[in-house]
Amino acid sequence: MNKQQEMTSYLRYLIAGLKQGGVRQVVISPGSRSTPLALLVKREVDLQYFVAVDERSAGFLALGLAKSSQQPVALLCTSGTAAANFYPAICEAEASNVPLVVLTSDRPPELRNVGAPQTMSQNQLYADHVKFFVELALPESTPLMLRYSFWQGFQLATKAMNGVKGVVHANIPLREPLLPDLTQNTPIDLSLTQTTTQNLIAQGWFQKKGLIVLGSERSLAESRLALTLANHIGWPIVGDPLSQLASCDGKTQNYLKQADVIFEEARDLPEVEVILRFGKVPVTKNVMFYLRDSQAVQILVDETQQWPDYLYRSQYLVAESLTKVAKQILQSTPKRDQPYLQAWQNLQKLASQSIEETSEQFVFHESHLAMVLMKTLACGEQLFVANSNAIRLVDRLSGVSETSFQVFGNRGVNGIDGILSTVAGLAMQTKARTYLLVGDLTLFHDMNGLQLLKAYQLPVTIILLNNNAGGIFSFLSQRSLTADDFDPLFATPLDLDFAQVAKTYELAYQKVESEADFEQAIATSRKLTGANMIELTSQAQVPVDFWQAVLSNFKEKRMKGCQL
Image 1 (cartoon, rainbow, N blue to C red):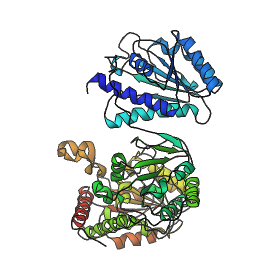
Image 2 (spheres, rainbow, N blue to C red):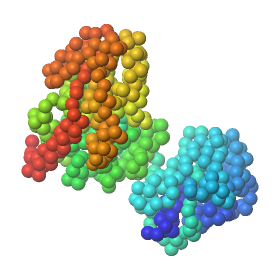
Image 3 (cartoon, rainbow, N blue to C red):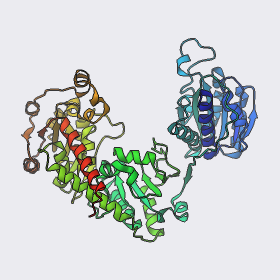
């Protein structure tokens, strides 16, 4: 595709998303930069368009249309002060809860703040008079970007209507040439519908071959209910380390704990017709790839209506709680034994076996610790898993606990800062023994938190995985760099004596070198009233070699057609 064709495809998907979200009328104020959008809107048989030369008048025309219909009406203009002239109508729409979708065309980033004509800052132009703002990416026609464009259009229209109705604003940068390819008529192959669980039940989706995916930040009760649902409809279930699936003491054989191993060879997996997702995409890398590439229908459940799907793969959106959705399905759908579930369970057994066999070939290191961590903790205790390598080790390798405890983490923005201080807050609030699984670099980032542990005598056990490096980068593409580049910029060795650090903050300290050492150290921790540190040292490359050996073992078993 040339640039003109790419822009045309991208904007056609944006318009299709607006239509899918409920936009049926567009008010256009003519101008140069908005040319492609205006021409494409004019050719949409499902859209009624009106032309108002003066943007101030156009804004109020759209206001009147939306007041009457109580449906989202779009406003389109060119760049510069044209957008500013929408302001009075936007203020009125915001104050009177009228749904408007404002589309301001703009110069691309390279023409801003360099004296280009008809160019001014248009981002957040309407301040808090709009309930949602987005600046769209520059047009591309990759499958991901077409899904993105469609999703943005749908999101704009639905956000104008959801909750308290109001104004939403998209700033749309466009490069020349501005004339679209008007011969392009390829059908838009995407669909996105906000619906209800009852509608999906009536359509029979939960009687098909399916998969449940549970995101992070779930309660123990929610995770148990999700497992009950999986058992009832005969679907396998996978989840984020913070979903509580591994620590909720739920009895099921449907849970695919070693999903990152199982989904490594996604092409050879049992057929899935529908995926029921609750919340965010899990941290599990291979599950993310599977969700991205799967042709199954995907249902996203999110009662907050933030729709956390950066893959833009969902076809149905359900603004209900996990509890409400699960209970409706349990009440309205007969219990089923899915014959294909056995194939998934066999894969889980093979994955667990591969991990166990591989562990026997390596000396005790952080992978082993992650494997035994879940079974070591007691009911009512708390586990906080730090970002970077720690959460991925737990995700890939840990088993399922036979007791019930809450697992926490900071997976909003996924930073490695402030982890220890967050744990201090958890321990202050609950008074429960709280375990922090953390790498040396992450602990270093928040060593001030150690003073909180000391000052408040908090029952926190730091389980330190010290590989003297930013270990996560050993798993990433940066590892292919030369040592001259990799070590100072990514490995960043600290060479810290953490026994001395513990002594400085009056923390009990123990170094472990075996599973028996670790279990004994945990037992000792429970007898303490304050904080302590358990340190395991290893080389950053060892977990990488271990993981590759696990995958090789699993692949070999599958090639041999192992049956369990």
